[in-house]
Image 1 (cartoon, helix red, strand yellow):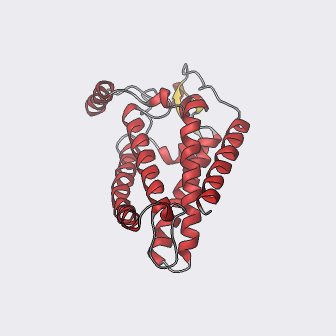
Image 2 (image 1 turned 180 degrees about the vertical axis):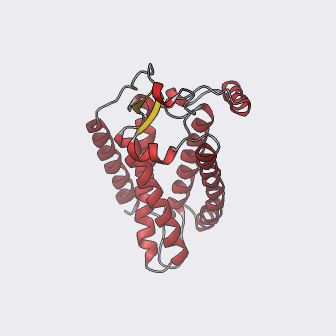
Image 3 (image 1 turned 60 degrees about the horizontal axis):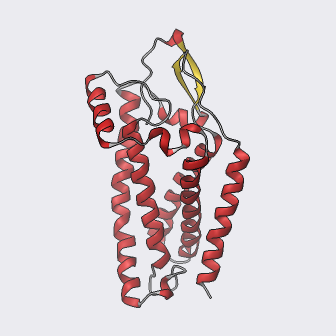
Length: 231
């Protein structure tokens, strides 16, 4: 979530807030989450592709963690993760209608990002040990006792509803900013651009080639984990 523009339109300029790697990550993650839900609900032969979707999500999440440390300014966790006191102060300012504009995620949005990343990582990790006891098992299911795998499988199924709650809260926040504050966060995540005060500096960008290199290394590491686990 980003802060509302608190300047007249004529005094604003368009900034490239979100870089290409963040936007690609975001929309691919959305697409894979939808696929994971649909394939799990359908079952059968689609579960093999459900596994592949899980590997893709794990790769994306690990990439986002790395990009949150070495990526462009607005992608870095240090740019938007604030302590509880600063976050509560921001929420009070939102309620009072005096919240300052944020270039990128505001403090509340930063905690939402962390919650979603942590929840999705937990879900992907549980999936590595899950099994349906029929035809599909995660690559690490055979590395733990059957009782443990069954427990983790149950947690994997049930935890999805926790993720649904987090995603519903995320969507609610987007709708709030769209209709209560007049800020279209979806468009900003598509185009990468958002209006800010004319004197707001352009956030520093990092080469997308670094993102591609990071993604390639992480993808190779995840593939190696899967292959080694199957031996």
